[in-house]
Length: 164
Length: 277
Ligand SMILES: Cc1cc2nc3c(=O)[nH]c(=O)nc-3n(C[C@H](O)[C@H](O)[C@H](O)COP(=O)(O)OP(=O)(O)OC[C@H]3O[C@@H](n4cnc5c(N)ncnc54)[C@H](O)[C@@H]3O)c2cc1C
Ligand code: FES
Ligand code: FES
Image 1 (cartoon, chains in turn red, orange):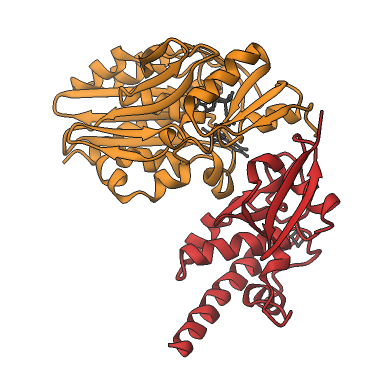
Image 2: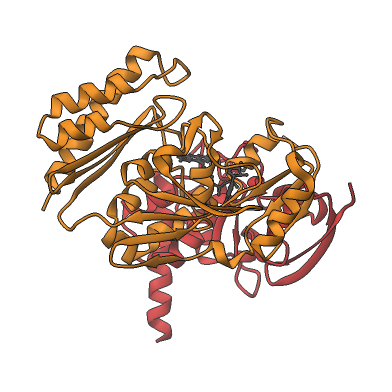
């Protein structure tokens, strides 16, 4: 089977590569492009560790083929840093509130939380738990993840107000 | 977890998609959101030489409203459905059900068309569409035809759609104002298919009841709806339990499933009745 020419806008940069059509996006990111932020936890669409943002949607990158995302904008946890390379707000809040222990689920958690807060800048605790239900964590018990996301929302809103 | 290889197609016209399917016959399969098909391909329970991605076909997108009906393009995602305020005001049961499907990531990708075309007894939309008396439009080499949701499901993964046909639209009659509704689902955890689920509509002297994942197809029970319309809740539950045929699996033995089905249906009926306005 011949390989496909795959082009993405990945974290703001045009990237390309050759891959068999059956290649899953997570494998293309990690193996062809060496972007290893998104993790493989289950490979069966259940854990959310592989979550990336595709054209404004949170997607499990183990459950899409490269062809399906050809030509689209993809954001991974690497793309959520500030322009100067320092940790973005959600990343910083996960650190500050101990929203991680082993850190394996963290890239997926942060990427999903990013989209959740874009869609709902003032989530209740219930909204956060419901909106994060596609991401599993084996370590934290979720409490500090929820806190980190709530704190991120407050921080983002404060920044927005300050800018106005 | 690596599927067998295939050639990838992304046509922008429905006629082109049908052409590819005709050319390759059994070797071709369409993909919508891929969140039922790709897991099956990874398990090598589905293999095809040609995968036809429907995402660029405009005709399959969008939600339209008229006084009497709602028409959803097959490629409407569960996320779009949840997000659409006009849809939620006309058919709130759709949103209530969609919020109980899978998890946020799956709902961004999973489509209504894929959910009803799939034919998996675990899918939530088929029973709901039977409850609402929806109609599916399919188009194939011989043109277009409409199939009532209540006639669509033949057995697990077997439907009235021919292999060369693409499901294009789902039409749902808008219920009269004041109709009570509920979609109730018992699942072991977020992201799981139903142990038992039921859809109930009631009002204006009529009622409709459908059950999910309790047989190899969704079950719409006319007798249950008739009993409920007459105010006989026990009769409705008895008729629905009589119509289902659950099988033992990891979600439990047959007796347990029947028990859960009864509990879930009673909850759905009570909530639907409380919403009759
Ligand atoms: C972790 C997880 C949990 C889930 N939980 C639930 C749940 O609780 N309830 C539930 O209902 N679903 C659940 N799903 C399934 C999910 O909702 C699917 O997305 C949905 O069933 C299929 O939609 P799709 O667009 O992804 O279809 P695809 O996977 O692309 O297609 C499914 C099948 O339908 C065919 N098909 C698709 N579109 C068309 C069309 N327009 N015309 C003809 N044939 C077509 C395909 O060829 C394929 O055979 C879950 C999925 C995952 C991964
Ligand atoms: S690796 Fe994709 S959901 Fe677990
Ligand atoms: S921090 Fe270990 S899995 Fe979440």
